[in-house]
Image 1 (cartoon, one colour):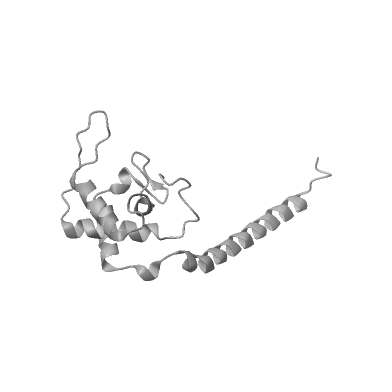
Image 2: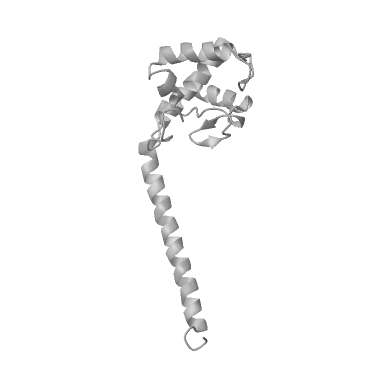
Amino acid sequence: MSERFTKGMARNIYYGGGAFFFLLFVALTFDTVTVLPKRENRDQLTAQVAHGKALWEENNCIGCHTLLGEGAYFAPELGNVFKRRGMENEAVFKAYFSAWLKAMPTGVEGRRQMPQFHLNDEELNDLAEFLIWTSRINTNDWPPGIEG
């Protein structure tokens, strides 16, 4: 075996493989950095969206819901809830979202219950703005199904 595979060959494979994968990493990083600004919607960030994200974090929504595939799988995906429930109409979605959260928990027997967070109208609007903003991120059609 030592006649076929020498220490020099092993060293060349190690350094050559390391260099190849380092260059691959640099190329993929460059691709991500150049493509990302075309796919995000950073220019649409507002104070309401930022406050909505803060509410999302304070109330640990990700502890039950997923957002763009990240989070717990106990409750539905919310990355596309604006498209699903609001039909891409902001006024309809905000009315639906506000009524839905105010009605929680529903008390339906045998159904998972969402807690009541006691958010005021401004907080409900800001959380809805955050979900609307999130739904407008180009995610390459993630999630694959409309219901998440």
